[in-house]
Length: 375
Image 1 (cartoon, rainbow, N blue to C red):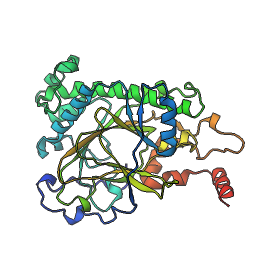
Image 2: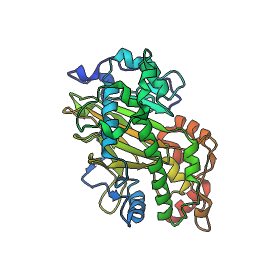
Image 3: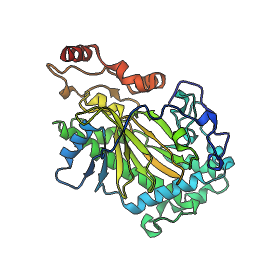
Image 4: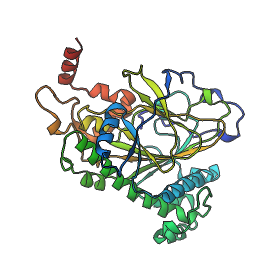
């Protein structure tokens, strides 16, 4: 999501290289120390889940969630279909390449053009239904591709086996979209209750129902020099929350645990956990909850042993949404922390300012209170 010129696709097959080319080499990967903290794990089925979610959001801006109701066999198939897509020949993937001004399709991460060096990864963004992407990737038989939309997902999932039939990808992704959207609403309502709000103080079902679902598929090839390359550089997400499935094996996701009594700000690795999903707080939640919880800075690292994939669901609003703190969180001594604007205006600003957007939006009233309290 950048106003800069779109970066061209990779000129190399990354998994064939024996060294990291200069354009892919990063020198500032150890800007913060590394901690051995453990990101909270919240069982959504627990009666104490709301309290645990609230604490995790305030202290970390992230947590892993279990007991979420999304079957492991569906997560396995989503992962298998993601690997299948990225295993296609480059010429086939380029049929669905992201066009000028478009956010959907195959290409590098949308954040890549903010950096002079190139990410060690590939991406595929699905906005709404994956049907248009299917027509581009398999134009000769896309009608057959949709024949299995009514299939039962539970009939043919095998852990660890790459599912080679292209005919199953669409129903898997659409089923996952439906379930993950429902989960995002449950999590957002829990976050509200943890802040003392009523779950109906914002119509999450209406908002999420109007917005197009956004899935970001990420592919991180093995890297011969992982200490010199980055999968995706540090950033916060624009969404309310991002729900991430990581493939098993090697870790890749790292997030910043802000300075606290245990030490300075530090990078913390989030290892994959079988059946768990990672929940990252995004910029919109920081704004609508008036700064009581913070969006989390995160990145993806690479390794030399194992190819990784991940699937991120960005839970965002419809175009009409007004980005502003919830009124019940504003009062004497607690002014609005951020200036209000429309969702399109916020996205436009994020494309220009990137990771400095929230700092720019901090309201004059909140800044005055902040300086007074720190004096």
